Length: 144
Image (cartoon, rainbow, N blue to C red; front, side):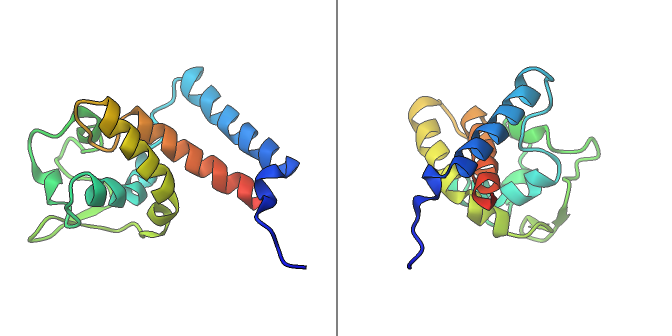
């Protein structure tokens, strides 16, 4: 018998998906944790806004002094960025591209929504934070 893509109707998938979304919502709304895109996750995610928002795979846009606050908050006081090494043309990201590829469908949905509803887009606004959480919850549930 050939496998089907009916995973979305599976109780294990749906329960796991709702559980993961609920835990993340609790952490952000009640525990007031930092936004979901942070720390190492920032480095893995950075490929997406670099390609689709800034059109700059060399990450030279990070050298600008007038970055949006939701992006600039990731810069250390020393001016360095976590996981990035300076190059002649910008920066080299030590984090692999794989997680960004998995997040891509969710990111593109957030990008379309953000372009329609926000005056400017950096790739780190609320729609992108939500898309990041949804991608993690989806793949967590898919693993069940």
